[in-house]
Length: 113
Length: 113
Image (tube, rainbow over all chains, first blue to last red):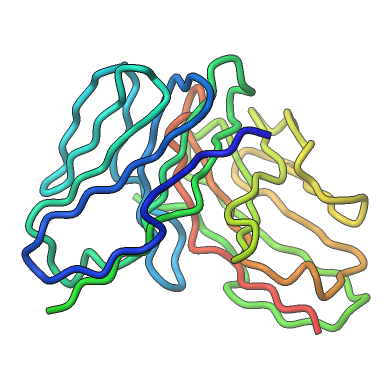
């Protein structure tokens, strides 16, 4: 089945630094979602994107739906220790089953105070 | 507003036993999803329902797995008989309308010995 390539797999950064991660697919997606998962909890929805080129912010988080509709980016500005967690991209493939979100493998973020 | 509720949070059982996981979706959400998360395979969609009707169960690993949604506020995922390879975190998620923005519960960590 379709796979999403999410990179990097992990990041170790200093508090205050900006973070950038991305997700790519081999086919066109209609929707991109970004989730954050903390240990022992379920993924929490951060941002949803529905149109090519769309740029959406949620506090220090900004995500973009790529123009080609085959990628998406998530940026975190001025990272803080509570940003630690695993960030997942997810998408709905064009022509795919309506509820069948495809998930990336995640980017594990560690922030050093 | 209560989120998705799952029970139990942790389950330890012996191989061959029946396991039942429970989920209460967010009120008003028409879609309900069951996922499994492991280190090796990441998040996998098992089955999803729309208006209490199973729509896509192609992700259910084998006949030992079954899911029901008797009403809009309750769903179960049953494994009978359980095997050690079923050990994973099982998430329930729900969404409104077309099922794009999915909201996850805290998960059930299942260990089969």
